[in-house]
Every structure is written in C-alpha cells, then in structure tokens.
Amino acid sequence: MQGIEQLRERAEYVLSMSPADETEVVLIVSDEQLTRFANNEVHQNVAETNVEVRVRVALGSRVGLATSNSLHNDALRLLIDNAIRLAQAQPENEEWPGLPEPGAPPTDVNGFAHATASASPRIRAEAVERVTRPAHQAHCIASGALSTAAHELVVANTKDLFVYYPWTQANFVTVAMGEGGTGSGYASATHTDINCLDIEALGGEAIRTAVASQNPMELEPGKLDVVLDSYAVADMVAFLATLGLNGAALVEKRSFATGRMGEKVTGEKVTLVDDGMAEGTLPMPIDFEGVTRQRLPLIEKGIVQNVAWDHFWARKGGTTSTGHALPAPNNWGPRPIHLHMTAGETPRADLIKGMKRGLLVTRFNYTRVVHPLKTIVTGLTRDGTFLVEDGQIVGPVKNLRFTENYLEALSRVEDISAERRLLSGFFGASLVPAVRIRDFTFTGKTQF
Picture: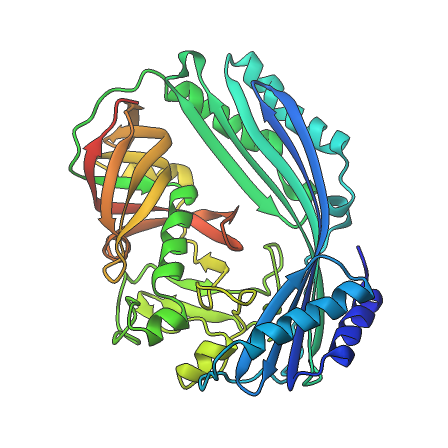
C-alpha cells in the first residue's frame, strides 16, 4: 500500500509537469495474491504488486492517453511526453466534453479489510484445505482458486479534482468433480473481508452437487420451468448491464432501453439497482474519472428507469454523469458494476416446490449474445442440472443448451429467493437471488 499522501504527491507532480490545457492522472495500485488448487491439493501460489499510471491530456479538443507502471520522476515525465505526442497526432474532437469538475464528495464507505490485505499463503492454504479434505473424503476431486487483493485508486486532474479510495477483495471459486467425471458441482463467493467467506460451506455445496449429479439422464430440449440459482441469475443481469443499461448503448440506439425508458421490460417482481455504496458488498464510491457514484435504480418493478453514464457519454446524451466511468479509453462505455437484484421472501430451497415439472440449474456457461437489441443469449447449463417433478428433485440430467430472450424470461419470473449471493464478475460484483421462471427455452442437448 502506498498511502494517500505519497500518491497525492505523485499525482500533483504529474499535473505540475504537464503543459497540456487539461491533464488527468489515474493511479491504480494493486497487491494481488492467488492460491490455486487442483486434484485436491494446492499446486500454485502467485503474487503480483503493481502500479498503473494513466495520464490523459487534452490540447484543445485533441486528446491523448498513455500508461506506465512506474512512479519515478523520469518515467512520469516520459509518460506526459508520450500522451502529448499522441494528442498532437489526433484530429480535433468536437464531442470532447473536457475533464470533470469536482462534484459532491463521495459517500464515506469502508471497503478495506486488513484481514484480506494481510492474508498470507498459509492462511489461504488452510482455507483451501477446508474444501480439499472433505472432497477427498467424498471421493471427489476439487479444483479452484482463492485470491486476495488490496487496491488503491487515485484520480486527479487540473480542475482541482482529487479523490482517493482503498479497497480489498477476497474471491473464492471451486469446481468439484465426482468419481468417473460424470458429475460436477460449483460454488463461488466474494467479499471485501476474507473472514466473511464461508469457504467450508462453499466447498460442501460444490461437493454435494458433484455427488448428486453423477450419472445424469438425457432430457429432450424444449420449454421448461426452471429454478435458476444465483450463479445463473448473475449472468443474466450482467448481460443486461452490458447490452442496454449504459449510456453509450442508449445514445447509439443499440440498447433494449432505446425508446422504452419508463416502460415495462420485465415482470413486476424484478427490481435491479446499481449501488456502489452498499456496505457488505464491494463498495466503490467513485468511478475512474473521480466522479461520485450515484445509487441508480435501473429497473424498478419491471420498469426501466435509468442507465449508467460517464462524463463523455452524458454530454452526448444531454445529461450528467452518474459516476459509472471505466478506465479510459474503453470500448464498453459507462457500465453498472454493482448490480443488486431485490430479494423475495421464499427460502431458496423452497423454490422448486412450486414446480410441477422443470429443471434446477446451478449456473450457465459459455453464454454468448445472439441478438443484442432483443437480449437473446445462448449458452449451456453447467455443474449441476436436475430434473424436478412435483416439487421434488428426481435426478440429474445432462447439460442442455438454452437460447432465450433474457428480458422476456425475467417477465416470467414467478418467485424469488430471500437469500442472495455476492458474486464477482468480469466487472465488479452482483448481489443476486435465485429465481423461478416459467417456460425457459432449451434448444439443444449435450453428451455430458
């Protein structure tokens, strides 16, 4: 950890040395450690400490950005020169909005856990053993990873903006395989505090699923009621965030929300919020332009209410930033990365009781977009798919391919679990329940 004062001094040095009309410096300090395990034993420990320096300059409306991983004076001066040369080579950009001004101070939220930042390889190995030992006893093979990381973010610019935020993240994921490789189970979780991860319980979940899913039967595809565990639901909401709940997609008319703001897009049971300030999750009260994040109701009781904006796309959309910028430059546009889906009242274990005949699905795998505007996605079930009849699990089935309109599927939500899981994603994390959906469309079958 560098600390706020040292990083402030480095940021101020960059700003003072830059001859550009506008200059922004983003410092991302990371101390990341990972323990991998396979075949019921730890096989790798890796660690990386790095600092990423991103300097963005504007010469009028010509913008250049350069990156480095050194905080030394010579390296920073070279970085500024590189950014200047890149800006000089650019054409004028009439859409350049300038850098953000300082705004409302961010919410005082703590996302830093010393237990995570100081976790040693021994601590991680002892945690992993609480999975591998029971797996061996159950005649299963467990693989996966436990990672711990401490980060610092500084954003500063020549408009007197300066923000600093430190945070930590512990993430665990495991896949357990049954004897003969015919059954598998999955579990994962993330938190700022490694001590809040119940790794033994997660391992037990994966092992039980692996044992229960051995020797699956073949099932013909078609429309089936489903109970989707949180892992599958996290995939659904992440695709919605990418495909439509961002200002870039809305402005370019490639969002499902285009022309539908204020209209119903899912069932009334579905409420989706982006909240970067919620305790007990992975809070991050600022974005990568230094703008304070807003708590953003995205879909409220089925009605699409808002999309995420950064400074650039907000100007194009005739609005203001909601504090959802990713590190520049990015082709994704602004994106919600703290997705929270409102829980229901039914215990997760009771969701299947409402099904006459259907499937219990642990998670999705290899999901890919078929039609962005219609939010049609295809993928496979994975790591535990079970046939349910008259509210009881009958047995495991081989994985199926689905091709489904995610918005329409969420319009057929019949029940939502009271429990939610905090799950790490490609960007940020999602806090999501399990759901029961009517008539989910399966279009193919597998041999496994």
